[in-house]
Amino acid sequence: MTETLLHQGQFENGQMFAGPMTVASNDRIAAFLAYEHGSQSTDLYAGFQADSSKTLVLRAVKGSYCHGDPIHAGDGYRTLWMQFGAVEGEVSDLARQYRNFVLRYFSESRSSRKPYIFYNTWNFQERNRYWNRNKYLDSMNLDRILSEIDAAHRMGIEVYVIDTGWFVKTGDWEVNAERFPDGLAQVKEKLDAYGMKLGLWFDPKAVALTSRAYEQYADCEVSWDGIKEEAHPIWETEASVRMCLVSPYGQAFADKLIELSRKLGVVYFKWDAISQYGCNDPGHDHGGPDASPEERGQRFSFELCLKLVDIANRITEAIPEAIIDFDVTEGYRCVGLSFLGAGKYFLINNGPYFPNFDLPRSDEGEFYNYNVFFQPGPARSMLCRTPLRYDNWLPSVLFLTHYFPDDPGPNQNISVASLILGHNGIWGDLLSVSEEGVRRIAQLLGLYKQVREDITSSYPVFYGEAGRNPEVYEKINEANGRGVAVLFANSFGKPFDQARPVKHTYITKHAADVNVWHPSNVSVTFDSAGRAVIEAEFHDVDAAIVFFGVKNGADFST
Image 1 (spheres, rainbow, N blue to C red):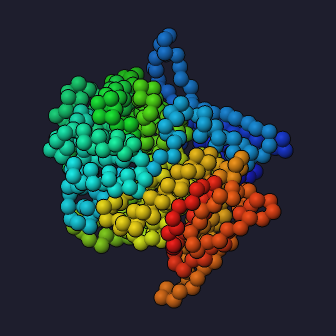
Image 2 (image 1 turned 90 degrees about the horizontal axis):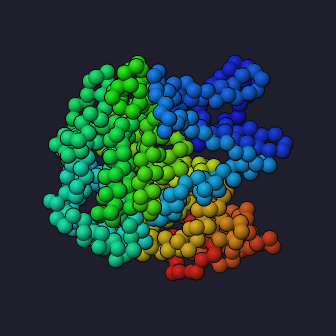
Image 3 (image 1 turned 120 degrees about the horizontal axis):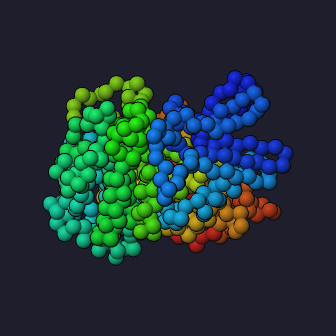
């Protein structure tokens, strides 16, 4: 997240800026104006236009309407999605109030705000492909899934998400009986016994050519200048085509997920692979024959963001406990504010990729692994902590990100220390984690659960940047002193074969509860104002978690 201060030259030259938020302040108030269109800064559909009078005007650029758009008496006209707010105080006061608004009042979908611990099968599916030379879906079977659920429960995971491959074909989304002969009945039974929730993966736009959905909604297939795309397999399942969600198929997809929730008990829905571009068909709901093909294509891109919100709202209105999670890992996906009113974002998959850094392929074979941050260790965690800066304005609980559970202990400390700051996700090979590792993760997550509501609601305090020394995060509820402080030790200099202990001292900004838990390499005292004075010593890349307001458990030495 970037916060850019505008200068006089930008106003005098009438520069246009991408949002989605603009903040202005004086010595009395701070105010913001935000808009939705989740476009990239290089492809604006709306933007803030500056002028020499130091005025910013929100202007439509493209896509907000088409020539000949009908306005029906019963439907009215929907303007550009906007938010406006103001507070007495400074910009920092505005940020706090907006963050609280997004967490507590922006969405009627309360489940999307709950700090559950999530597990997703996808990372192991990729490991099984690239490391074990198997197919992506070879691990998609009842025995493996039941064993993983047992391990996940022991670690303290609460939402178990089965990624791609559980279905026969896209569009109809029926459980693959060859992989799950009882239609996920034993999976749901075991999850219920453990008090866990079921999640499933979906590609909302994909429909198999032989599906009943395609037979019924063939006219909703995407097309560009009258040309339809060739069908292609979806992760080793039947060949599928893309459907336009800005068409009657969008509502049909929502109704299918409602049906599946009632039939299978699924409450978490991961949406993947939704491109913002690619349809200018005159027969859909983004411009008719009177509009030009260019207008219809722009209108599709503009409307898709809000259509996803409509679909998600339809599901959560029918299934209040549903959580809709939109994977925005790849490019060309609409990332804006409005979707956070209906669900949350799946922020980082296994990317970025070697080509992003101009690194050549090391293997030309079919098992080439193009993911950079794929190996167990602290590198992925450092990358994934970078977006925690969103937490100044947008609660980090809305950006699901997964961390590795792999041994040894310091890696697990780093992963858990990272995820409890709001990202709340784990993925990897659960069945290969040592017994000590399982107990370590379970203990740390058990402590986290005692104060996670406080951590989620508290405004963040940052000290240092991701990957640097020191790197500290404080999430303490100012009302009661409950929460956490996390200290990362990221670098030990050269030469690498010589130990050089690192010591960090951190004094909390806020008074902290005296019921404290910390690992053995940490000491905690309190000053006269009730602030915690934390001293930690590290002999390796590691993390130290200090919980405040918890009942202690057995210590795991780092």
